[in-house]
Image 1 (cartoon, rainbow, N blue to C red):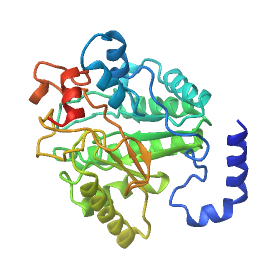
Image 2 (image 1 turned 180 degrees about the vertical axis):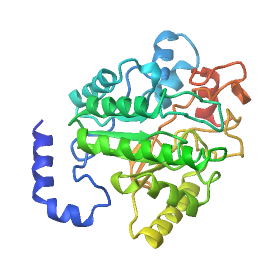
Image 3 (image 1 turned 45 degrees about the vertical axis):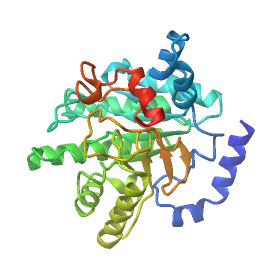
Image 4 (image 1 turned 120 degrees about the vertical axis):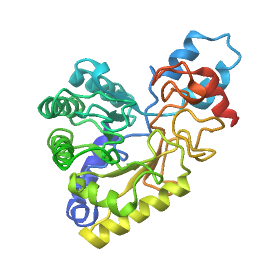
Length: 321
């Protein structure tokens, strides 16, 4: 607690400078309020290791995956969302650690791809859900990845649907600004193989990026960190040229150790990447998609459902084959 109070006092003393220089609408720095990232004690990898102590793969999965800080995803499966995010942020806060949360419940989620279709029942339902999500976190420090794929998934949408989605994301950012002042929110910006930097910069800006801490890249994908940082830099050049600002970005490195082979759904031969950390070419390198969790009934995860933990896939990702 003393550490947090000292950090808060320092932030307040530096407030005029922070407002002038920081690219975020929020002055608080959750990384300075905590002592490292939170390891989810109930992650799918943790649960599998606990249930299979005699399995020959368990020691490697425990060492290389289960004890690495990674994100927890929240959606309709999470039950009452305010208590769910509150319990998770509270558990991390009690250990002076920084949790990573993913909000994944936007109305018409994955509308064009369909693989992860679902989400809230209406824009107003989503507004209520995301407000409770932010309220659950409250003043605790946190990092939130906002709606993976939501700005890349425009291919089959008409302008009214695009406007509706951008309004939902802008509203979500406003909710975090009001209710979760010590949370850094990153709007998802897809990956280098999906949307060109000019288009993504425009979509981010129109969806409210000035209110966010920054944007996230490579969520649930496999592109190398170098490819992502080059893409993030290109998006920032477009933001600077067109709108007069830039933003920090984070990269999902959970499964990018061998880069991408052009496939996104359980491709073979992938490898875990750099563990969650500050810096590394981006503001943070984060494990957002848990290694070993299936992308769906496809590739080396044939017969599985999205999110199901596959120990053989996890084990092969550790060793890169």
